[in-house]
Length: 305
Ligand SMILES: [Zn+2]
Image 1 (tube, rainbow, N blue to C red):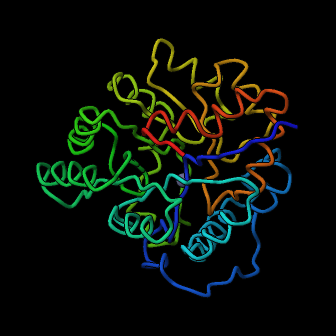
Image 2: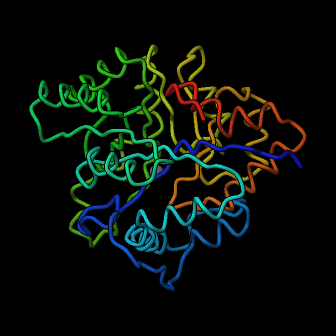
């Protein structure tokens, strides 16, 4: 089996990305509790079994629990458990998280590489100025979450942010997929719009910004659909979040290792099972393994280990 000697996880979070629970990143002594967890069943199957259970609300509830228990301390322990160095691109989602929180976390845990997020309550010019300042302070890219941020990808504020990241030549990761994040009875379900993250919306966004490198998250398992839809575009990448070895391999064979980035989506995915699938996928192909595991994202953000 190919020995992977370094990993740059392109898609990770810490703290609670959802509304309502407040700041959990810096809490200590938080232990994972026992609850019904469809994420665990999926990862146990090597991400081969479908993630969404019979009652999708079970997944929403488990995601909330995983997020609430996902502290910096628990992340560090998980990074330490891996058998090779693992660095993690950390994706904040305003209004529930900020660049400042993730920058602070990166000072405490140097394996964290912080991205930033649009402060959408600011006037457009101030918001763009802040993003430029974030880059000066170490933000290596931008995370967009149209659903949780309740903002469509063609909103003028998102366009202003894209101008900043085009000028800086740094990547943008957007959520893709119109799954809900709240049960219908949650007060927050009215504050989010899954349709803003629909596949077609994301593809149209990639076409509007052909000179910005865009990671369309969560599509390695649907790589055929993604790269067919994005035909002619060289700016589109995807990540391997929640993806089996077989799907990773198929995506690389079909579209080349340059377009596929390893991602765990912790705390929703887990590092151990995700890395196991990565190793299985590229056994015997050390070049593709390092591209996907590390080099692609390293090139996008100018990172050297
Ligand atoms: Zn994510």
